[in-house]
Image (cartoon, rainbow, N blue to C red; front, side, top):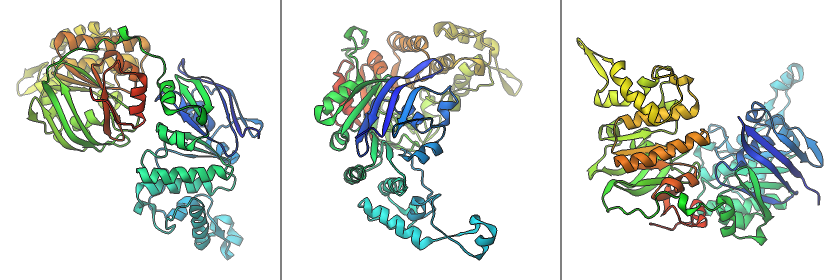
Length: 526
């Protein structure tokens, strides 16, 4: 049987950064291909190309070709993809909560009834044929083996059922030939996930090809016919599931072994003196909810927090600093921390470098100097001069501290008075770091400190974290999607999956141990 879809030598760069480098594989009708790889491996970019998303055309397009049903196609928009018979179910639900299940399934393809007005005024005045909409939607749900009432509104459904409605909407399209599923079981319980996988098998057995993006290797092994693995934008493996196993897949996803000598903090010893104790913490951060995190941080260590996107790792620091609603217990230096009070953590001597440097991190229209000293000025009332009843920002007293930080972190700028908005992303990130450090914290949280910055700036930041940890005794909790970075600088690494701690490993643990924790298999506590 010929290929339904063939990606031929696909290449894509963003601002000179290569994210796909010659990706080439095919999928046949009725075949389930699992697409696996770490965050940043290139999976989303490849699917954005397949769906003609704006982000691709707005950044110069791509090289290579997409062959669909034997013809080279140029997919310029999601509408083009749908016209070809390509459907996608995203991680985030695309349902209308106030509409019924049936209306969501038939959205933009509703059955209509002509009436006297529409015969004169046109199709726009036809009425919905609700009985037919309900009947056809019920038939599609039945094909999937799902007994969901098509007449209830979506907001009344459990989360798991919403995922099935998304699938039903795609299956109901008469021209569907290829279905892409992006982490479809992330929000499902174990029993729902099993039903979901058997439902997808039925879809494939009906001749529809499926691209299944998942980090859950058990699911890949049970559902897929073959598995394609991307790493750093390159295709590193394309083989039948029957010819591999999940350990091998995990190792191929994580990739090259780190040289032991490049791991700075292997086997450092610490007293069992806990600076921070987190018990049963749950944080309601959109897209990154944590459910039940218990974790202790030893005084003087660099603790890494890793895991896949959407599993809750970045919510931990955000919850502790009062950025999102949180429940649970947090003790800092043996005393309860009231994290529901915004500013409590700062007042107690902690600092936080957020992953959202533009949203909550920086005042883009203000000077480097004001940005660096802002937190210290607000919390500890430093860098202020009194004029009568008023306190004003004292640029002169701030300049010395700011110049020192500019030099220490090699911030490329014209001087302390330059506006932060005029700096590159890497230099903005360094300003965020400097602002946290000027407060002289005892415990520093840094979240995604190297996201979106070049290799040179990354190395300076990582080296600086190690330096302040060793020379100033600052305890650091570093959250990152870059596992190799965590392994380079951390003493221990906690992997968060499905909102809980899956395990804690030393930086020199085997690649496969990290990969298995990321895929949801608990273990390790060192």
